[in-house]
Length: 92
Image (cartoon, rainbow, N blue to C red; front, side):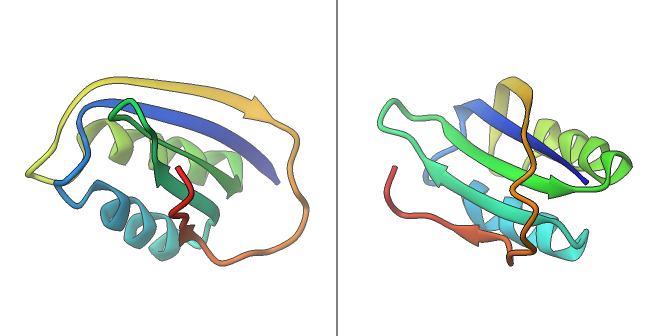
């Protein structure tokens, strides 16, 4: 299992981006979370097989039709090791 931390900037708040990420990651069988940030970006972490995380990154660059992704940054972090359902956090 691998885990990534991602940050997406552009027109990504108020356009259903978090719901899109939650639905996409859940459909792929990934665990993790996503949230809005104070500066207008969306960030999160996702855990699962490397190949599936690469597929998620493609979807993050695409986003929902209402979004405009200007930048995606990704870094690898230590896996949490515990299966968790992918969720939206509201503490950002």
